[in-house]
Length: 517
Image 1 (cartoon, rainbow, N blue to C red):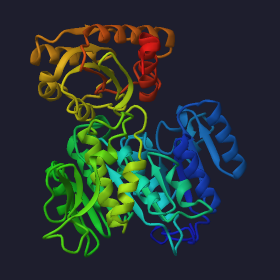
Image 2 (cartoon, helix red, strand yellow):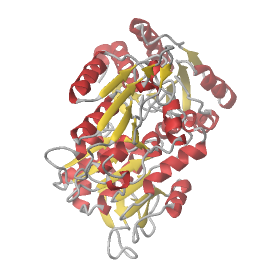
Image 3 (cartoon, rainbow, N blue to C red):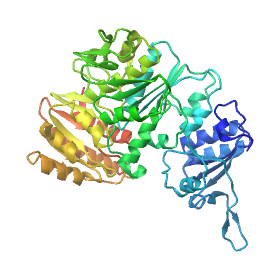
Image 4 (cartoon, rainbow, N blue to C red):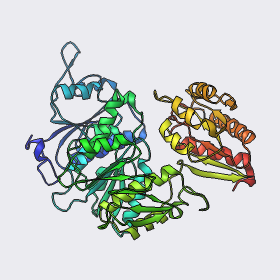
């Protein structure tokens, strides 16, 4: 290697001769390998599966560019087995040295390749770490970064809307939008980037120094990947390290404030809270229906800046603007506003960003309103904490739930929302666990089991969802909300949570016919 890793802090450094192993050939792995090759590194790519046609094409492209691409489980069984040379007796003989491993988010730390790299003292980087090190030496766009168990995507998109309303060339990236490696290397540089980070990405991220950072909330999730809730929280907390101007935390979630208190930040960095209550000093929050800033105004002891109103945000979920936005969306908007204000965005631009914003599909998105019943797609609620945010938003609910719980508990969720439930319709692998919790905490609430089917048979999946919708229609009364908020992952029956939401919406429209609106 021509230069120590600690000198590879910008794209203008001498990357030639760096020996990099990239794990995974998905979107992340391809982008990482391509970027490294462009800067003169020697790249080996390993992927356990044979992949689809797209990955076949990507492997061919990387091969043409000079990468050594090795596909198949035999190349990932043990470190570093992917560059083995057959010995005389046919056994694998290891013959590969690398300086750094760049890994994809799906690869757990205990994977044999990554575990062996750690044991040998070989650094492991996420694509986020690589992207940070590939920014230009001079004039790099500042990063505003967001993590949390739920709400990351909406917050980053809200933030991007505010930045763009201020006239900045800004982009949402990370787990949303374009890959961060593409964003930092774009030929027309951005003024600022809003980055959504998962705990998987943060685990292998070591040197980023964002302008402002935020942990939205913390609830049990991905414990199977991290090994414990404590390890999961520790990876989330890494987002605050080396923050330059503002660490934004959730006043309603004291664990996020504790993370800020324990972080090693740049001198002068401030702690800024966001709250659904009245904001105190160095906070943003609500005063009646006004989003108010008491953190980034000079006279914050005696005054606040108006950043917008709930009405400015009310159409984001696809409604007609007459009802208040759900609390979780308001919280996300406040967090985004705090980050934007840390970046110097004016109150007027924050407000305009709120007005322009529209929620993504599958997050409390209204599918139809018919005969007094509102049908809402919240398929993105892939864990109990996310579902709770949606369930709290409506007083009377026919709840559609179920899927893969990933080891998460549902007792507290069901106990809290039990008074709101008109009926529950269940589907998916772990539906029985939710049903048992409903029977314990809401024994008078009717429960229908719609079953589970393999996602490879979409006709059967459609039949199950048609049954779900028919049962919901029978249970619902005027004033009710039929809410698909599964509290579970989707891959038992659907290719993605987006597919689950689309199938639900299609079934609703079939059932309502021309009456849906």
